[in-house]
Image: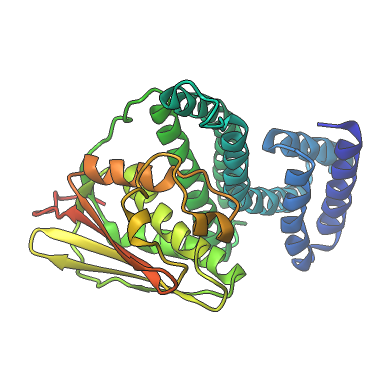
Amino acid sequence: MPSDANQASDGSYTSLLERFCRTKDVGLLAEAATLSEGFIGANVGPMDIKAIHDAAVSKLIDSNDLDALVAAHRVLLEVLVAYGVAFSAISERLLAEADAAASVDPVRSEDADRASQERLALLAVVSHELGNPLMVVKVNVASIRRFLEERGSWPEELDQREEDVEVAVSRMLALREELLAASRDERRELEIVPLHLQRILRRVVRWGALQASKKRIVLTEDCPPDLPYVMGDDGAVLSILTNLISNAVRYTEPEGSVSVTARREDSRVIVQVADTGIGISEEDQLRIYERFYRTDEAKKAASAGIGLGLAITRDLVSALAGTIELTSQIGRGSTFEVSFPASSPIPEGCL
């Protein structure tokens, strides 16, 4: 991290920490959340943020002043939660840049398969880099929560926000595992167990709502309370649903809509993600599950993206003994339907 960026980040954080510990003004916590954007822009990682925090605490706070220490942890929590949520978007940009850097002119390439392997090899390197900051955020948020709960100072309003960062971090960690497996031309091992699909779906929809609100897109969810459990792997199902919802939001124009519905059909559970977006031509529908393939319309609508999301989604659906179907029209939107095998009966004590 450059020294000037370090000094600017250090000064901003230290100043905010001092003001909050002195005034306990909760309005300053919103300001703390915005600091994450500056940290990311200056290439300041979570470990750097923790180091800045520790230095500021040792400078400003007496180790015996419990109230001030709790206040300081709340500031750090706000920054890390915001950092974790924002980092998923940053990660996608990094992956897109890696893909662009590894692209090979097909006219000059001696072997198209080798070009694809070169892309995957570079993506594997990038995915390794993604793992550390994401895990640091996850571990630090959990540690801060324990610290505050032990002192009766965990703010209830942060329960939902902690879940938001958990979904964002889990999504990127799952993507990281898929990229690593793809780089080795294999599939990662899955743990097939009964899953409460309704809970997973609602978590993902809440995460998607954050992205949709930025584009003024209406995101709705219809999931019946008696929806049965499904047989699947938690990380795989999370990847499937977040990929589909993320794509729907990404390729839908502002003021559009995305709907997510779930229903049971015989021994299957069907999840449908429908949008009013740019749509996919019949010709492109034949290729959308190919690695690195992106339609011309998709490239125009969103520069970010590497053409791996749907390929990963299809492979995961297949590994879970599911099916995926698409209906779409250019300019009218797309609807993806994914089916999962239902679990019946549900083992006692299964969550």
